[in-house]
Length: 91
Image (cartoon, rainbow, N blue to C red; front, side, top):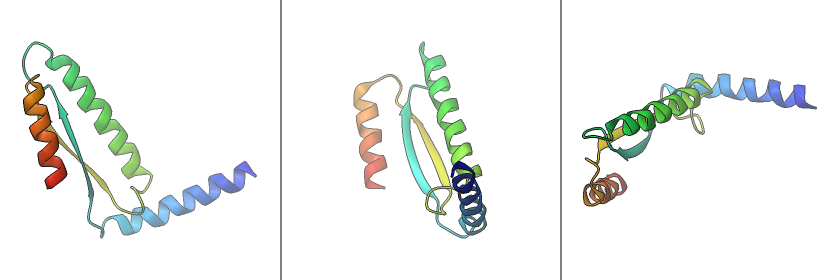
């Protein structure tokens, strides 16, 4: 049974990857600290998110649509992060 599911998943991913180039991307917004004394942690956050997005896109995206990551610097300030989150939601 697991072989069948694996084959089905690969076929679906293959079909989705062909149509994903034509579809509008799904944008994921990420606010993390990219400046200041704790920027190292923000860079790790961004790297992990980029890896996840790459894996999603390699598998055909989400519902046949590619995923794009938008990363913004919250400057380690909660009020800046909150505003960035609002901006991501509105746009």
